[in-house]
Length: 289
Image (cartoon, rainbow, N blue to C red; front, side):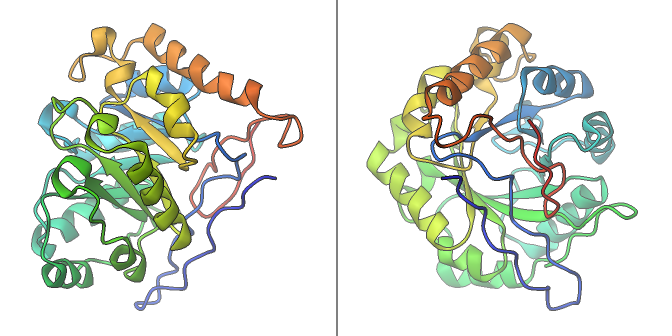
């Protein structure tokens, strides 16, 4: 059966309608793939390869390096609603005074999903206080719906201690595992499949959609897809020579796309004869062949 996305969030306390945390319905074991890009040119390459989410990020500026808002806006214009666009606010500490304006600026640039990083192992009370100080509504430009919020946790810094219920309680749409140190060998070198499976299951039980990333390669796809996350995030695997800071390589993108297409081909016909594409806007499902 096709697994339905999480239920809508209630309206935020300030009256702004909270965005619905959903990607389009997908068959189990067939995650969407997210491509991290730094430019319009790279966004076009990733779209041509079939990426389901375009992620605006500057990989040379850290694990969650931020792009200038003008570059995010240009990528949004290039994507033109065909798939969701996510963007990071940078490697910022858990301080509302720094995070809040950055989140609002990224949403105003047109990102459908705004990602913040959780670095180190934050004190639970400090984390609660920080999340309480963040804006619950991230208005988009013009009539664009408000952006969804996603927390990115660092598997090489936090191990298997994940405050997922805290993020769900503060209205976040989703959670994602990544790695802060890109020389650590990748997500699967940091956490074994059983702990990754627990992260996915815990997020799902809380009504969150769940992503996995962290120097992933094409060979990681079958193992991680079997855990049934909503999406897998890539940068290193998409670059020429596997150099994260280099340019996106169309051939590398095609290899990854073929690996993911093989999952669809191998799926039982009873699940679905076609793979749906993600919603063109968070909160407005649009099924795309």
